[in-house]
Length: 260
Image 1 (cartoon, rainbow, N blue to C red):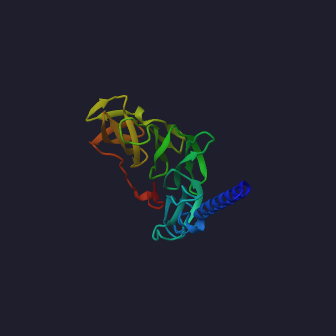
Image 2: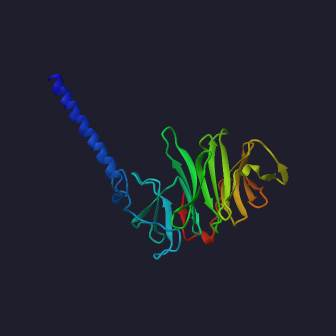
Image 3: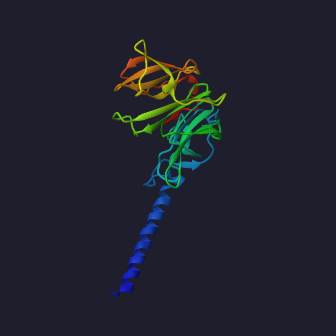
């Protein structure tokens, strides 16, 4: 076989491989097929999703993890029928939570050299109200039952809670005044009934009881604590040792049930 013929065979083979790869990606990203790699994912369609009252009853709103161009986009199904066809909306989030018509979406902003991250407050129709740049990788998000307060946690050092080299930053934002509390580590801490200060304090995983009170995890000295927080007095008080990632579900938040 001559060199020219060998080159032609190589180019044809490369073209076929490229075409097969493109076809696989497009097929995987077809929303009608659910965006699944194997093409047998849950049925889905593009459409609008609301966090408010819905004619078909409460919705389960969640971050879709099926493969394709709609991965990480918010999707919804009727709460009474989670196997129904998914409605996939425009916003894409790495973390999401909602209550009382307010949503918090922690998303990636893709750049040429590296990604950055942003906290976006959404209204009931998933339109952006405000956004805030994040100092690290999103890990947790929460909205108070009234929708007035939102909280988020990011990793600013390390990339997981495993080990001792991680550092977190947790913020609370009041959507009535748009006043942020940028770092809960600045709160006054009471540990076992005594005032406590340490350079290694990390706070994460806020879950709201109301617009003043919340629970979270506090880590210090190689131990974790469940803490009761007061967003008005800006205090954290330990409740129990060796507890992480608390979660409260209030009745007011049931209409737009959410999934991390």
